Amino acid sequence: MSDSNTTYFTNPSTFILLGIPGLEAAHVWISIPFCAMYIIALLGNFTLLFIVKMEPSLHVPMYYFLCMLAITDLVLSTSTLPKTLSIFWFNSREISFSACLTQMFFIHMFIGVESGIFVAMAFDRYVAICHPLRCSIILTNSVVAKIGLAVVLRGFLLTIPSPILVGQWPYCRTNIISHSFCEQIAVVKLACTDISIINYSGLLLAFLVTGVDVSSITMSYTHILRAIFSLPTKDARLKTFGTCSSHLCVILAFYIPGLFSFITHRFSHNVPLYVHILLANMYLLVPPMLNPIIYGVRTKQIQNRLLGHVTHLN
Image 1 (cartoon, helix red, strand yellow):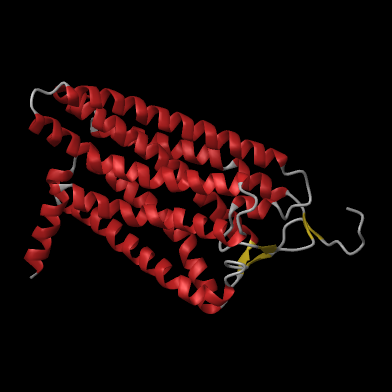
Image 2: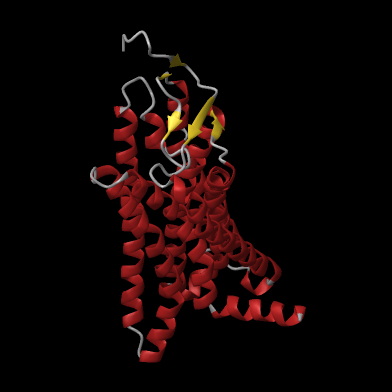
């Protein structure tokens, strides 16, 4: 890079987020569904946490993991959407270098944490259905806490190298990020150095973490389905499968949009940039919005407690 007009920044003080390039005129209109989804996510997940906290009968592993999922969803959506809305509404495009790296870290860490929680929830369902008499012995509160800690530590340790490395790189020519938040690939493209280590390590981690987690979930549900189909009556099979249906729905709501977004971003170079950005935003918004709705609709214990609180308030 010998061009005399090139400016290098070891650590640029700020980055400029463009929002959704190509759809600037529609930013205000796009903000309406984004804001609505965010509000639903906040209300749904806080309501879920409140119900579980207030009802001692729900203080069991399944609902502890559900609370972990709700907290993770709140962090994921809040890590990006307030800044995105400030771009859409107030044209507040600046973000400090450290805040950008922090945002990037939280996004990737809690995506990994959410994937790990799904594995833990699948294990909980496996124990509850395949070993019901030993469930209280296997999944004690101590074991649940250790699983939660392990999931968070895994997410932290796998994610922390990237922002540290990216934070040490030199940047040149521009500090403008063509995105609505500090998405890792959009940020590293601005660096004046070889970024292949981030690209390859990101792909490797994505395949390893997702591969291990999806394989673990698949193994758990293979045993669960075998146990369900061995039950003597159709009603028993349907009732037992119903206890897993909510979990299966939220798994699909998380992995399918994520896989679609990943494939289009990495391999579909003819897809317009604004499509990539919209998909990335939806991936961080749709699961946090849908998860409490799915559990609220599919889980009678939550429905009954919620209706009880509403009736009591009236």
